[in-house]
Each structure stands twice: as structure tokens, then as C-alpha cells.
Image (cartoon, rainbow, N blue to C red):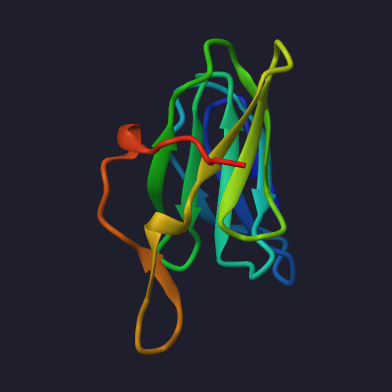
Length: 126
């Protein structure tokens, strides 16, 4: 279970122990939305700091920060294709983000972050 908080952190709970097992930090404003990927390995978060962030839950690290919204972001989620996310802001602007370039296939077929500067990510094309 995941919760975005007003202090800018995301708490990850182990539901069997009912205690937070991880804390993800990086946002500078309230976290308004979080979404888990279909494979359970990635998290995307939306924040009042006008950013959308992609997290690798295996490493517990932020692998990308997307900063194209001009107002607070209130929602983010993964598209069914698994290679894009979509975020929405307070003014009802929707922005797609390509994320497949952050994944490489290891010998165990587990996605890991690929090197790239987060601010250089182009918008997804239809």
C-alpha cells in the first residue's frame, strides 16, 4: 500500500505488518497522487511541486523527474502499454510521458533504470 503525504514523502506499507516499510523522498510539495505499475515494480507520483516522478521500488530510488506542468499536478498513472505514464494538473492539462527508456533488460529480465537526464525526456507520441 502507498500513501502520498503533505510533507512531500511517499510511504510504502507492508500490509502484513501494518507498518511503513519504506519512505520515498524527492518531492518538494504535497504528494497528490500515486500509482503502481501493473508488474508492481514501479511507482509514479504527482505533486503540488509541479513534478511527476518515477520510482523503482526494487532499488527504492527515484529514476526520473518530469517537470513540464505549470501548476500543481494532482494525478498520475500508468498506461496499459507499460511504456508511458499520464499526468494531470489542477488546470485539467494532461501530459503523456515516455518511460521505456528508463528500463533495460538484465539477465534476470528485471527492469532497471537506464541512464538519462530526466529533464530531457520527450513527450510521448500518439
